[in-house]
Image (cartoon, rainbow, N blue to C red; front, side):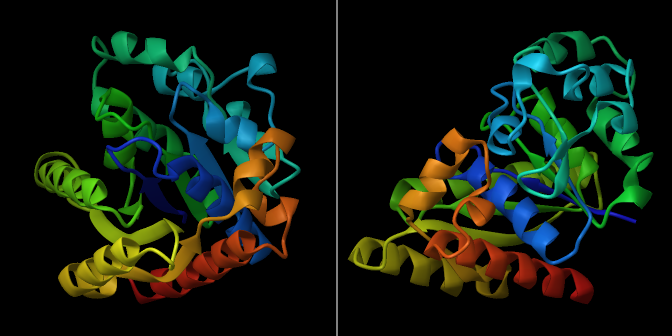
Length: 256
């Protein structure tokens, strides 16, 4: 049965989508069966996996509303070697339409449960705001991976997210926990980055992943070619870091 993880942070521009797409590709390279769930109406993870969001027959939108299942809506990312439950701007409408539905917070959990035997990992790329979509992601997941930059504004946003996760754990999903914090876009030349990194390790201990993702141009270029950075330039420092992160995730899951 699949382990389901949200990649979430209430702050925008912290590399959530880059992390989700490249972790999926890194795990696929380690012979793991992976489903990437795009839960963001912008559809960036869908495009980053090499899938044209304008030509989708079905998407996360239909799955949440119950008019399609995961097996029908999923698309293969040939560039990444994993499956994608894709999204486009239609998904923004699901926010309004789900308000009237029964069990609205658990629509995604129920849908993924039917396909869980097909995968080792399901990775959910959440939108930056705390919305009904993000809530569905948190209710479906066993744990949360938090990508964050090592800067002080990021620390403020982190405390908000941790409080949100605690509330969801207490009221909606008792299985939910923080799997780990991933330091991304890291520049070791900046003293501030090193200071914040040390603070994270001191405060969160082994919840901080040992792998650090460096700031890397090749990772930023990859989406414009419709490829994960891991396959776009496997020799780049960013790609190597995400493959190492995939291996660390597999090892950490075995201990759970």
